[in-house]
Image 1 (cartoon, rainbow, N blue to C red):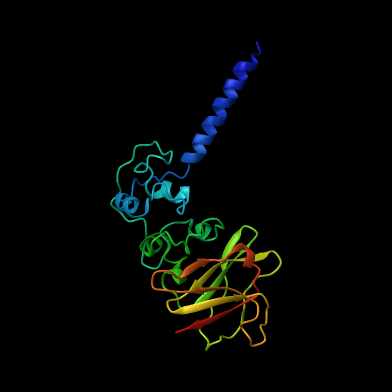
Image 2: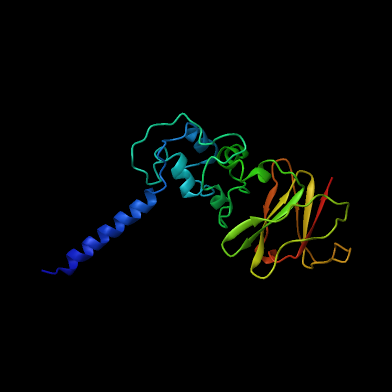
Length: 225
């Protein structure tokens, strides 16, 4: 006989099983990385949302009890990375393009971890070969625009890359460099006109979030000391 209450119970069980399965889908098969304890002590790795759930499940599946990985694993002694200058994870491009937590420009993920996980994808952010750069969001993709080199003060105006459907998200300013965002595409040589915000790079802080009110800025300057 048909019993609505039983069907509801069965349906609920199936849904719960599906959710659990999806949650555990990324759980690492190689075991916990030997640095899990250190990462968690330094940056609260297990609960730090700057690292996607996928990253945390991949590298510390059972060390972090909050990730939904219930399979018993042993600690791996091998580093997750491969040869120097290459990515240690097939998902690096996906992580780097994440508009919510873009991996390579994260200010809470250490350079050591960026190098270990995604040395190739994050090469510019790990070892910059230019002075300044802007990052944009187009629909669901986060991307770095063409980097620029320093110019003499007050700075040569450079197009920001902002356009219909594309907004500014992050600024990179190397140590000693100043990036200024402007309303106009061409400030006409007078960079005091339409100035929106300024970011100064230091040895410890090089990546900055563009304020939502200014994410349509059309140009910027890059001046370094």
